[in-house]
Image 1 (cartoon, helix red, strand yellow):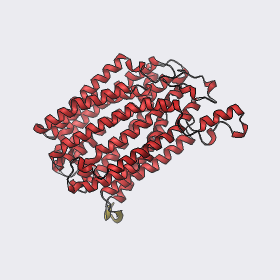
Image 2 (tube, helix red, strand yellow):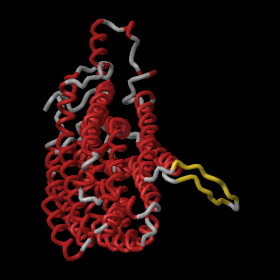
Image 3 (cartoon, rainbow, N blue to C red):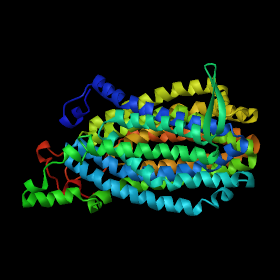
Image 4 (cartoon, one colour):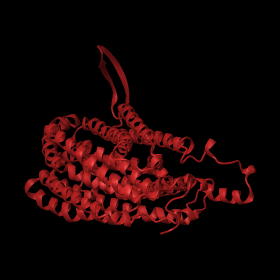
Length: 507
């Protein structure tokens, strides 16, 4: 089933929509699952170092999510526009947006990374960490934020490929990153040691860098992947590639008018209209990520007084739970592409049909994953840490959270549906209001009487509430009325050769 059916205007049956959704969703799900598998392996490797290194990583993990999430959200402002232009069969505008997005995203990553380096020293102390974990926590955090410019380009390149409907390459490169991370960590975290394999005893070299090795291994894998993603997206993906054989004409063969258009198309500094639309989409999402991660940091502060075991158990349980919700994020990636291209092609009814289909699919899959999590919670925790106290705390927390997975799916995929059309303001408010007005107050109240279980019960209640309000907005159809506005909802294929910036006019 070809995604170009969307831009062709051809009617799609339910079977065709389901086939197209599955075709885009499965590689995105595999990519998300491989990503969480990487986190599992990272956590398990660090967990073998003891409770203090695990607590050091867990202490700053939510702060890293803040920085990662802000950079990821910033790139969505460009990738959504790319999806709209591809849906409208305006591939040259899509290429122009991608090129200018590279510059904008990199500069944004530099700014955010510098902010992170400035606060890396005092941050663990602000979060209530003890002296035994703060130095490792600072080192771990600093390495990651220093690499944010490269990671931001990885987000943009992957988002551009997904916007073009190429989930396979985007997902495959993400799997490659996970494999590289495991290999790099294997040699960087541990000292030189003897290992036994198939009856043979081998001396395995190691750098013995501990927590620093875990950070360097992951960053190294991200750098290799970012280079690979950008190479493929700029030279091989025909809908967005602007280098190599996909350049339209040689400079010498262009007329004066065409040359002016080419200079506008080829410039790297974001134009006013593209930047305006990117900010309109990304600003609410960036603020939302900051506010939500601020709430997650507040949860970390609530958990910190419960002790080192609770901090580590909370961190490991968050990692373990991701096994359930990563499929939801994979389906959300597919939903963003499908609704984005449908909306760009001027097919709002089709966008709504894809919205309900993807949300329903996400709820079904995450519901099954929630059942599996409840059953195997102790086994999952035992893979992450050998410390019995951490295993017990994490297992009981996961079994509470498992009940919320279907409604969590409604929130995750529903948000992806709405982002696809460029509706980000109200969904962002829904997300951060839910976590601040429901989860944080409940966690603060319940932690005093129920400990870590109380924090996770608050999370379960809040996620069910959030899913309900996203289903309500999806049913209302208001999200289609607040999508990104273009001067032309559909651009014919014949106008593809050279498009001016007016093709992406401001709202």
